[in-house]
Image (cartoon, rainbow, N blue to C red):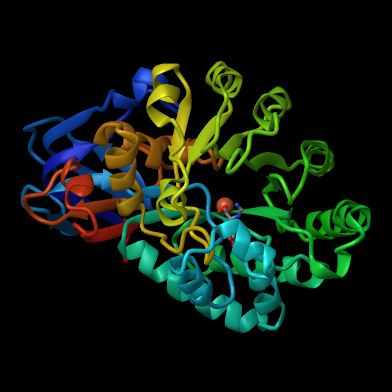
Length: 411
Ligand code: NIG
Ligand code: FE
């Protein structure tokens, strides 16, 4: 039985005791902080939170954090972490003036990544992803959702999901996996979309379910990718295997997917850069989480999702990295927080709730992570001396984290 005491905590951020699964609208700014307190960890979970100015228990195994700020680790609820090599060549094309869509039309984009990934061994894919994950841990990520979608054939999609499951086994990060076979139409089905949909629904999904490789289903619902009607077919098929929907919608166009997916009870709708008034109303009145990806807006120079309006209208907002080699080659949640504050004009408290508790909700993990609460997993970060939550968006590009503890273990 392992017991660890963290004492002399200056500020303990996002302390909860009501088991709330998420915070919506104005609740996102409601931000409980305990000062001058302590916390004990037993068997990887938060055992006790000491009242302000109370004396800590005597314990041999303790860390004196000397007045530092302690926060729950980030929950990154949308990533494509398992990919093969980068797409820096396409970045150079972008800098020369081509758009993301123009590059995709010339054989770049998702198809380019799929070509590279198919040639990669499972072992190499795992080694690369493990290195990336190690970097993310040092930047405070304690949970991450990982999508497939860079394989686009049976073997390669399964390969990605197996790698993600193995990462979960071999690290202290909580990982959920999402099947995104409908990320793009692979070249061999260029003139046979129905054929690919049939492969995806009738062959890939059953194989993935048989190996229990996915927790969620996703589709890139967008012009030139998958129509709303096709997307609905895919998420309905996923539902038959118990996979809830987390869907890429409204990145470049509003195809009516927001109300349609909300009506089908999607867990989260992600991107939302292009929103009509009707889209906004529909998600704000629902329990579907609006997962916003400001790193993608920054990198592709596309509009930012209307976070402020969504919060004003009572939505549940999560923030995530969308870490992938094409539209957001950045997995650092600290910079996502900063972009959300500066570009979406939301407060540090709102951005942090979106990056922790609401992100956990968007991965079905809010009973385990996302706040400092007795019984939850002890996945915490200790900031460097003298910094508080507000310092993170302010010192954009810096890493202010001194120590990361995942499930009670220092990383
Ligand atoms: O979430 N939008 C679709 N998929 C990814 C980008 C994929 C890529 O360019 O490789 C995204 O932005
Ligand atoms: Fe994405």
